[in-house]
Length: 294
Image (cartoon, rainbow, N blue to C red):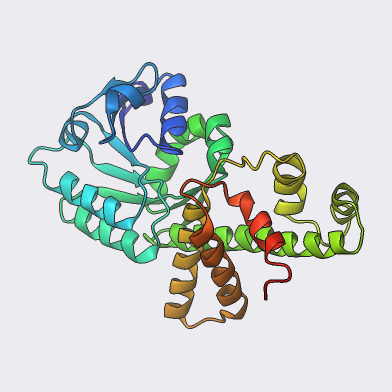
């Protein structure tokens, strides 16, 4: 199908889905969308609001999902599969839901001859707004290639990482585990340095041209912690969800989890103390304030 004739559907216009859908619309694609929190208020400029999931399935050729968790993704997959006369023949899930949930959604849709792309994204809300996020796609390579123009509209780094649903999720979870580990470890190291009379900016300047440099020391600390803004744009409860999903899947795989168990415990404890929708960079405050309480 000629790209100019392809109708793109988008379900889920929240923290991540909203800006991704907006970038697709800005690129000139014919976009129809739905969000159960109120599509008219959330739809991007240039997009058409649909009253239901069913309406999106009947109008779109390819549908993107950006939803909170695996249970909701699978509920929507069942709604899509229940549509009697679907136009859509390809669903791409951008959510982070874990391998098992992704495989369930793929199986549900395959029963209706609807292809599935497991395609979580990384880069946070700021990356979604800028169109620089990473797409981690597993599924049919020909369909991936055929949708490259759409991917390029909202992400800077689209990767095909495997042919099976669940592989994209596995890579996303290990990536987010590494990000969470960097944030927690850097927080702990900085707190130690401060206890020794060192200046935070000086520590970061040295670390970032040395072997301890990481995403937290290079980005989160200089731009979100040192500034006092704590506004990386990703909620702690969402990162904690990803870390717990990671450790659950590591246990199922029976691969080593020594570091993972420690990191997951820190994020669970921190998230339990935070108010909802607290930025994840506040884990620094949680770790800083634990000093002397053990």
